[in-house]
Length: 373
Image 1 (cartoon, one colour):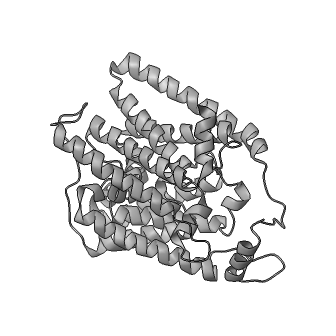
Image 2 (tube, one colour):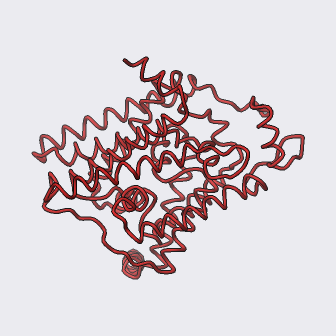
């Protein structure tokens, strides 16, 4: 059975995108029917760092990280799911990761959500706010990625040739075998044995400890079970679809000789599946399984701040090739650069709150004054 599944996933680049989209849809449905909420990864991370719903958000994040690390450790050699580190970091320096992460955090706070909140969970409910976000974020992402693919404003200098990224792209198209003049390629097995395998077992142990704690001290496990299952399905969808690959995402956003439709297929599958499943759940059930009522965002306001946030979000994705969900799923896979991305993301959220959130600014000011006194 395992061999047949692996063979099917490897037979076409479109099948993993479809499977990944379905898994993402199932993940958001589990969260919807279990807790009555949509799945917004950037809001989860923001609440997690501010210690709000800390336990549930931690379990969801651990579920995403655990399943991606599991697939990397045990299936990297069998499934073509992961780029080698040199390809993943190609044409984007640490500074690029920091800038993109900061813009992503800033944009997600200004728009109060991300692609998961608006595209995957919002469009199936025909939300005007979600369609507006998708329009401006997509235009900004495609514009940034396409411009970058031709002019390479975030690219490293090519060694020796002095060629522009456009001619390098043509060269790669004619000769798909990539050269690595700096000889910085890291062997998958070596990196897995010394970094990812210990992290996998450490994450597994932490999940077990949290489950035991929840079972014996809180006397209820549904928060744990719903969050963990949803996180595992979401992480698996990100990885199996190939969306943790910067190259695949950027080729899906760049209209050039290397355009890859897998990104479009992935989102269309996730949105289409949710359009059917979410409407079925909402129309046939009166309340979620473990909550008193469905608590879905009904705010349809669209203002300049929201549009700027959506555009900044798109620019960040067009630069980095990482959505916030795929960056979380890639944490142990492409560590440590992805850590710079996520730290910068939190910095962007903090900067946005400091400038635009009067309540948050007042709390920070009071905290600083109390420490000075």
